[in-house]
Length: 205
Ligand SMILES: C[S@@+](CC[C@H](N)C(=O)[O-])C[C@H]1O[C@@H](n2cnc3c(N)ncnc32)[C@H](O)[C@@H]1O
Image 1 (spheres, rainbow, N blue to C red):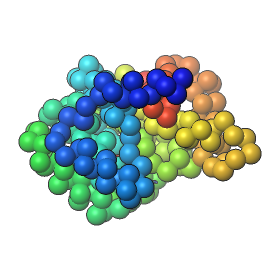
Image 2: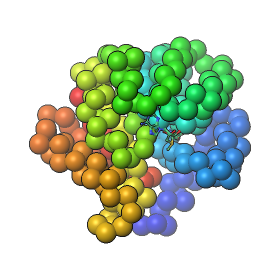
Image 3: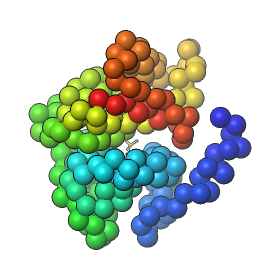
Image 4: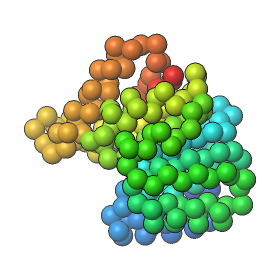
């Protein structure tokens, strides 16, 4: 994508809740990576269009992306899995302030060790954990979706590292290519890689 397009795309998007701009500024200061707002807006409209009411996020951080997911749902069941318990507590505090009717479920720990605590029959899963776990996490959590549900994976381009065969992030590159190869071999899972933000992969179960 032409780099000049990005500010134009982002200029159309407004975070839905008061205080989110402040959360982004704080994350930038702390060098904590967040989803782009264009991704948040896309997820929210996808959730709204699907009528998704049962959503799982893997790698929720302090809840910035969860605010977008909840906004799309307005009401429903939201599950968050995150390494760090204090970040989950912060996410809960932000979500509580929205006034939305969200049944929030928190799972602290490594996604890879906690799949048995996650629900089935999910409408949508959003995967945004450490990229070196991407393919393994994808394979482990795809069965949790209902048929026709959507698994969305962020940062497929690894902030440009995907295109650097000799650069850093080789484990992450390997996981992304394993995932893309698996999808090519399993075409019944209709999938699309959108050049939105840092590359957004959509996989239908
Ligand atoms: C990119 S940040 C998430 C940002 C969040 N989705 C947002 O946009 O607001 C990735 C988060 O995933 C967590 N994480 C990374 N690998 C994980 C794993 N294997 N299991 C659980 N959490 C993980 C990190 O602690 C971090 O908070």
